[in-house]
Amino acid sequence: MTSNQQTGNRKKPGPLTRASLWFQRRTNVKTNEKIRRKGGKIMGMDLLILHTVGRRSGQRRESPVTWFDGGDGTRLIVASGGGSRHPDWYFNLVAHPDETAIEIHGESAVPATPQVLEGAEREQAWQRITEAQPRYAKYQKKSDRRYPVIRLTPR
Image: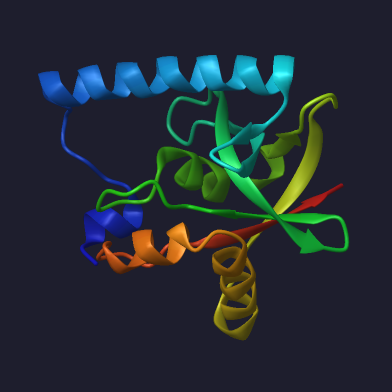
């Protein structure tokens, strides 16, 4: 993994990247509206809205992400999404873990404590995720980076 992939540093976006970011943000807004209005399921997967604070901007961010039951009232999420770098929400979550909250359809956002899983704990969670959704194992095989698995514990 290159240092840019690990740290999240990137070059100034070109015109295609700006268009892609605009499209992604617009899609996120629409998906969040759908989660709030109709429920959080897409392609057979449960979605929640992850509330973070931008690591550089300090602005509040809302990202729709798939989640899996982590047991004991926790939820597991995976920083996937293809591409050679982790998604922005992951870097925001790591930079400002105390500003993290989760919102599920029909419920208000609740503060959550994120924990990036490592070692055997990550492997157990990864197995649980890929058993529930084998597509994640396929996505991981196509990527040159290891997808982080994060446990979210409501506070």
